[in-house]
Length: 586
Image (cartoon, rainbow, N blue to C red; front, side, top):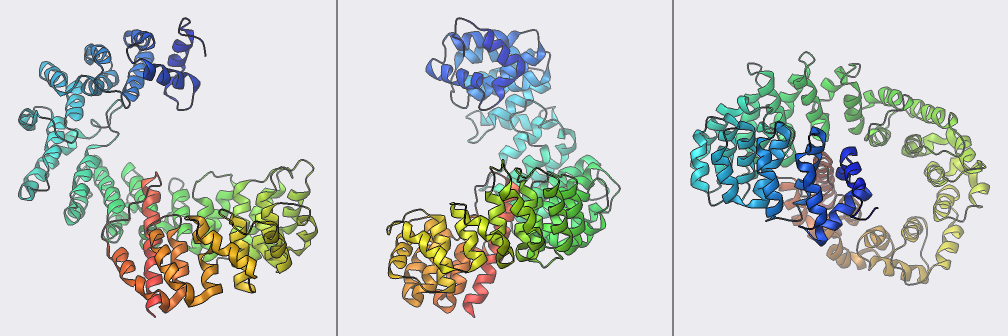
């Protein structure tokens, strides 16, 4: 990166947009420089581009300044640049500048700018910035804005007025929001807005935040009514999405409404309804017939196929195969194959398709999807052993791990690969050999090379579990097991089942003390429930905890980074919790 004396790098980064791309050197250089001296020469040079005649440059600069303000507030130098940009010819620049002004100058100056402006775009953005919780001390002024001439401003202020302590006012506030909804659609989520949330999504956020479950369901039904405009119906679908992400009962209540929309003519509303249904495992099960009816629809087929597959519906299998052969990059495709495999779908076509894909690629290439498909079908994928061996024998092969894992999943039917696997000094090869040969000597030899006091060793955990399931542990292996169990996280969970198998009821108290901490974890929760289920009646002290989890109206707070993935993780945890409770209670 050039020194500050040569500014060509800065202009190049702005013009290319690299300053907005996380991880790019120019962006990191700017953030580091501003952090070191927020009003220094770098900031001042950057601000010279805020009035650049090129529109793309101004948009980029204001977006960058807005992002920089996540680290810096009360920044008069930037506020001085943002205020005149409220009159920029470009609406996107005006929106970003309004947010920037409120962030860097404080509410007083932003309120003054709001009162002085007659531009709806800038005023909406300023109000949006000013009403962020906690509501500013200009509450009285904001209250007056509930009668503003701009519908989107009225809607924003009305939503901000909702209070948990004033539930009697909710019906009137809902009616006011509904009155301004249609005129606010497409306005609040326009480019440069503080949040990329539509008017309906903001209303839904207020309803879910106040836990107004039944009210939310009622409004979804009203907004998705065929008599409403397509724009309003779309907001109703978005409200349904928000509800399903928050409340466990929502898919059961709302899927019939959403399924009815799938029978509409092709439209944005129908597509949104499909996306809402397929995001939830519960909704996908309830709407399985409706999803099956659109498997040949050019627009909806891929999403419907994935959704049906992920709930184990065999009708999805041939369509999943077609997606794999077409080179689809659907992110949940492998998950769908695993689900239909668990549900007992015919393996012949999926395995043949995976073999076809593997055969068409160089031996050194181990594509993820076909390998994961073969692993999902396990022993039923035995016909693919020659292709898998070819992956290990390829002269330039540098990706054997996936092939080795699949061979282990196939088990004894992969015996032809044993001589080659013995040449691989990898942990994965050790595990595969154990699963293929059932030779405990392989496990014994690996564990003998490991220390007695282990902390993190997934292979050792897997081998100790296999030994506990199929044979007995030696005294030293038992000490290794105990050492791993003392390590929080996967070390503990990976050995909990083996500890129960080896020690039985003597370990019950320790397991009941350790495992509850994982019950609400998307990665470890179901694994903990499996061990508790294996403990049977000895796990009964945990029933109250399981009952509380199962009885919760709201979803478990998970942190995956994807709202829909978090919803599905909660659905799987809930199903596993209910099943475990039934088994433990006997």
